[in-house]
Image (tube, rainbow, N blue to C red; front, side):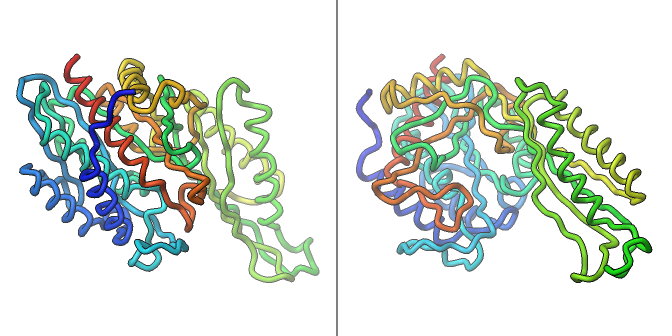
Length: 387
């Protein structure tokens, strides 16, 4: 392990900054005050931030020597969650909460900015990206990319805090890190009627229930068991009253995959099952399949740079290699354009009672972990430029 370059002054700055953002969360595409605060922080470092759209921005930090460019990304949006934590920095915006740790993502990349402006003895340029709307597809990554944020960039790196990983640990993925995150929507139409005379109606609820059951057989009987995939029906709405046969049913769900062929297979199988059920039950259907964020596939060379840095910062035994996550992330769009890598930073701490999962109303992070994330991003950026 190398001695940390994150001193107590920077730690205090990050704690204060993270708590400010936690107290003032804003929903996706509406992060106006968040972006304004980030812009002011960057200007206080002597930087010249560039706005892309209303709430995306980036800023460049040039080293003392010419070289390549590395982009470091933070997402900045919060979630429509009412916070239940009893802390002094609880959200002041009712019904909105940083329940996924993006407040710490902002803070750590600002910390990287502080280090880079203090220690300019590096080659090339580091571009700090602050991106809106990661939580709301189609996300803010494409807007930043279309706005020129990856122009002249050679590598791009990012991180996400993870409460299931203990503080002081990190998780690195050489290839697949996060999944395709798709949505499907189903409407089934029958003929309503009185519950006492089913022969006079066509029950949409029965058809929908059969579809839900059969959809689960796609994974167990159709997809190669060596190909990770998930089909989840998340909502099921049907009927009006206990004694009325439902004329309509609406369902929504998600499909998670890593491979395009499996994604296409599941899409076809869902509609095939739906058509068969509706033909058998004399109902009609509407089917919509919406491809979400693509799978996040890391560049192995960049991932190994992150791994080596994380081992220096945390210790070799503190860098994990778990199975990929079936969650989705629009950081994947950056990796479709440039070589780069995304890793997970542990922020859980049982002793401090910090155990709630992402998106929970009691979600919080071990703020002590921010010094590790900041240093890993900083050292990785400098190492990539030096090579």
